[in-house]
Length: 312
Image: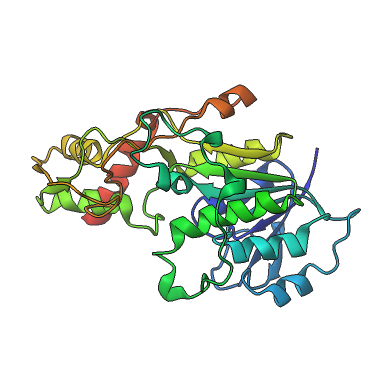
């Protein structure tokens, strides 16, 4: 069945892949962006130029919507704070059939080291989370340091409000090739190519990962379902920073040297995916809903080799 779908974002990384998959599935797609980053979709999509973080602009851009002619699905790739969540509620409540937010494994950050089992969706009581709408969430100077708390509070706001038919997809760390603007996988490839040692907190502290392709595939599938609420999305085959570094060394046939660091070490202090304790997600809910994730072995080496070519 052809659906009318809005993607907030959708011009880079897995958002762009999602738009491509939606088009291939025959859906009518509109993207809402600031218009800064070009997209490759030409006349196949509609475009709304708007600042996602400006409430007045968002209200004006979507003032034409009503409960009868709203979107079947909104994919919100740009909900980073409770302020963004509040705008979503004010603009789209009562006007969409499903609202799917790209969330993150990092909403579980406060649970790191508190339990041995992988994190399940109901390990967080979103209704009990504090929400601070006075914090300067939209200050670009604070974007990195406020990311984790912002994503957590965005979910908390949306669930506490309850007026959107909400799905929050908690995505494992997303890896991709040359289009990966985060530089996280490239960091480890560069370490190996430069014969630099890796300092690590815990060799056994694996975390959950997804490829950009796998992420867009899951989001497409989720849009075709009717479930609501949070759902974890991650491939089998978790890796620690130590594991990833060693794997790159073996794949590129380069000797590597890893050095354990003395505790305490904060999450991400030594390298992007370094944690002092296991940081895995439980994907049983997705499995119960009928989805089967692949294994990181299916795609990781290919991405590593892409970054190695970029290094050359």
